[in-house]
Image 1 (cartoon, one colour):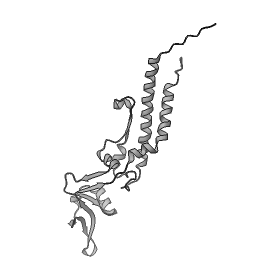
Image 2 (tube, rainbow, N blue to C red):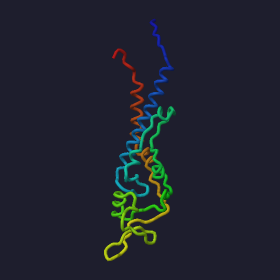
Image 3 (cartoon, rainbow, N blue to C red):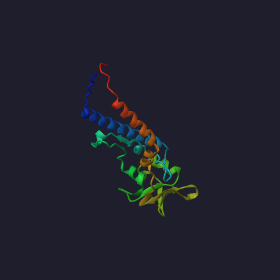
Image 4 (tube, rainbow, N blue to C red):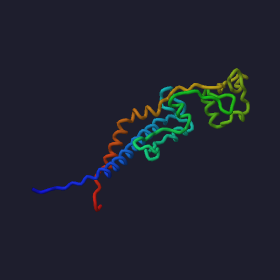
Length: 191
């Protein structure tokens, strides 16, 4: 009868498994973050419940995936944004005027274009305030409203982070499994 000796090095294998799982979680978070960035491609404001639109692109550019090593929490990865208003996009909330008396809410396309060209509306000649509206004199001396002046605005939720996780769950799982499987593949000696 011949004997076969098998040596099991469980500690080394478990360490390799932990690294592979963390890498898989990082890959899954990256898939969800990439889905979020692609979903926020529509310019301008979006309807409540829809993905946030892009105005300046800052929110979209702030979406990141965070590997467990970066988080300092083995077994847990994350994706999201550290820009404050992206949290309000996700859950909704109140936006208040900061450093100014009023928020200027554009009422039409002309107002949106004016805001993009001139961030400080006080420097625009000919603008006047009439009954909570900011506008200018139009043809025949009629007042043409451009902006509504508000002290605060309620922003309805646009759940982008949760939605991206749900919509990309299958792709996240596939990325996780592939990375873990590759991380646990036997190492070929001499190659």
